[in-house]
Amino acid sequence: MMNRLRFLTSGESHGRAVVCTVEGLPSNLSLSAEDIDRDLARRQKGFGRGGRMKIESDRVQILSGIRWGQTLGSPVTLLIENRDWANWQDVMGSEPGGQAQKGAGLQTADPRLRAVTRPRPGHADLCGALKYNHRDIRNVLERSSARETAARVAAGAAARKLLSVFNIKIISYVTEIGGIRSREPEGGRRADEKKLLSLFKKAEASPVRCPDKEAEEHIISRIKDALERGDTLGGVFEVAVLGLPVGLGSYVHWDRRLEARLSYAVMGIQAIKGVEIGNGFENAGKPGSEVMDEIYYRKQKGFYRKTNNAGGIEGGMSNGMPVILRAAMKPIPTLRSPLASVDIITRKRFMAAYERSDACAVPAASVIGEAVTALVIADSFLEKFGGDSMEEIRRNYEGYLKQIREF
Image 1 (cartoon, helix red, strand yellow):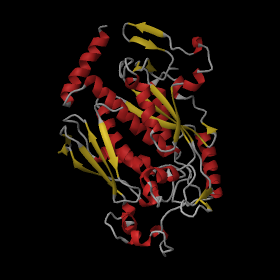
Image 2 (cartoon, rainbow, N blue to C red):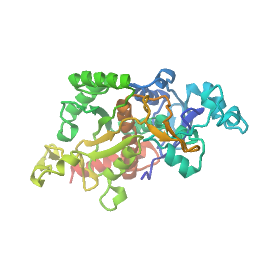
Image 3 (spheres, one colour):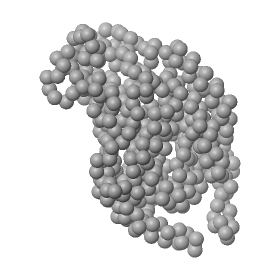
């Protein structure tokens, strides 16, 4: 689904590092570690996060593709060290014959050296073990872990920096956690970018990234209750893209439709189980006369709409309104009060193994949602206005805007 801007991540949750290589960034884009670290820090915040956030303080190392603060046009490699690696070298070492291999399956003093044989419901554990023929589920859970999203956030930060040059902003906020909903109107009903930015500003100041102060208090209380019970909570977040011109994406093929690409990327985030564009599911129950965004024209403004039920996308293309998408995150399946499972070796019934986890990660997921949205929008932007340098892209972009104004 990514044509002009491609990326590949690697690394395990308790390995040495997670790494991302981004290909397709044009030359002469100003990009620094600080630009990326800002979003890495936002990903780690949020009330209800687990013990790992106290250990990790993510910082990126730029290994290639940037010289003196500017991209070269070659692949950019980003590395984020796992600071807990020192405690896991024996377990996750790459060389054969290590202590983990010798101790696998044995009742060693260090539980990390034992093979994980009890799959956790809701995780990739059992399916992954069967698919890849692993008798130690650690070989699955280390890569399926949401730790990998740190690399996607790093790549998304680079894409965000590209888009910011053209005054395109990507924001997010939480609208629901544990069944408690924000009273703020959702973005699909908003056509005003200033109001959306106001929601974002409030969310950034909230420990659960919810712009509704009253709902925030109830959400925190519910997360505390879940922590006491050893349970977890899911929720809903919204991502908005502001400042997009008309015409990103296409109607001519299914895989070039902008909403298809965005849905694909957001559904690829761990624990996301539903995505809608605009007021997608609500619109399904209404007559068309209440759903379609009527078109107006004013010479100084051009074509515009007063409503945004479509979420900024019509016919697979951006229509000039804010692009709004909403994602549903299931409760994290790692519970301190574990669920019943079956040992893959003995076939005996056990209570599922517990790996360090969060009670609620919806606030973090919203930041990850921003990142993957930025990657898709940047890819579509480069597809439309492509060039090898920022200067060439700017010429193409400004020429297109002139074409629209003179239409």
